[in-house]
Image (cartoon, rainbow, N blue to C red; front, side):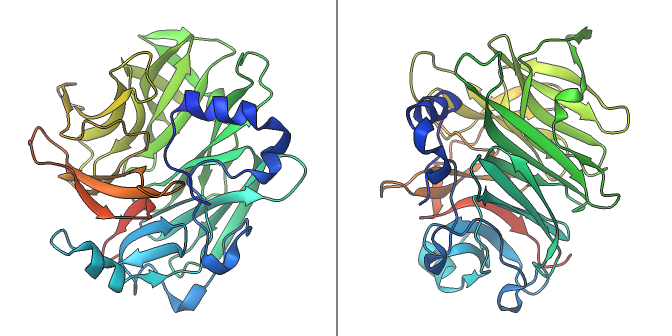
Length: 343
């Protein structure tokens, strides 16, 4: 089944209530083929589709698994659906960029694990790694070299809720694997910082395959950090910023900001200008708990709970101060990522 986006606190509450059946519960965006209920890993080489011959908007569907849909801002939802092609992949989260895609899905076993499958441009398995946790976020760098993921995990002694996050990075060129980015040398407001409760999530890469951005949480606060792979250091840029997504031109970051307290719908999408550090609230006023994806330098796509229980829909909104209303792009869909026609 596919679950709509949930806040971290809501996820934690739900997970705690279902501890006894965690192995049977799919948490996060579930993207499974109709004939593949219960499948926990990616298929490969499906139907001859490649990132070259089937460009467009890749996204997940509860009924049809991962799809490739020719994307046009002016096309109707029906037109998009009519031209969609099934990849045969079954993922909880999917993302494609450059000449690489990543599929993360539950891995069978007594303990909760996730299989991270790296796919080449033919959507055939290139390599895979199994890590502990429940699938949550996934990203690929613009070149396709760097792959990142975020999982929910249990058992950290500092977590009073019994759940926290774990993020990893794989360099597909060298094979270098970082299962837990919490080893980063973290600097908060210029000072070296150490704490047992540090958690990272929502990694997004720059086009140099070295610089990245992520959320870090500690002592009840969240920060946007800029990380450096070579020096393995990260520094905070500002507070109250989660699930960053770097724009194609590398100048802005879309993120969700907590604007309401004491509610189940606390966030609003914003865009941060990295040069001026000025933030702009977007026209989408509903609470978005997703790592938004850039369709181009001016448009964001993200998932919201669908009309049908247990589903999500993809919406778009201008990535500036435009008053243009958000638009429904596709129902029963999640995990959007746009693959251009030329690679």
